[in-house]
Length: 201
Image 1: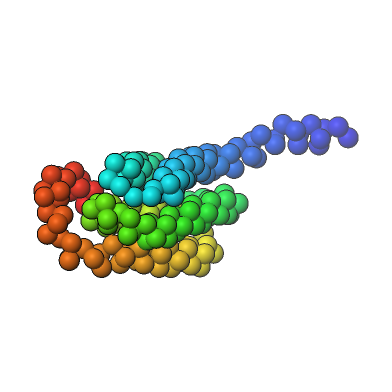
Image 2: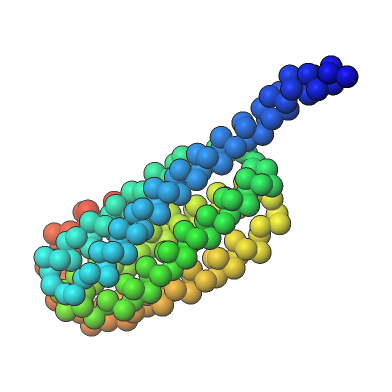
């Protein structure tokens, strides 16, 4: 009577090995999500504290650059060709991606609110450039994950995209609305920073 129990004990590691291999992919993705989440939270804290001025705006710019680097680095690690996640892993991945997107949505809303302060500091012209770069990385991440999870998650990912896109567009429009009228004032500054920002585009 002990033999079935013994065989069960011996075979269990062999049975769970494939699941562990799949979970390694999920762990790698979740680790990258954690890095991006930390960057978004640092960005949020910085823009929350910003009350105007050119010097404090430097910290805002640095946090945006750090966020872009984190997202770009994450995208380079989570893309693995035709890798497919199982149902349980995909549930965790999509849940964390939606949570990450919610943080990004709140960040865009805050940047929209801070537009008058950044415009008075004469640095608001930079924000749309960075926002476009961040959007590309965010959308690449969504597309990559959508290609690795079951079709059953399509509705959640699409709803996430619609919510984020709306927030992003509102923030982007807030900055570009006054860009044309202010462009002459920004030309001297932009001539110095243009080579740097071309790297994002």
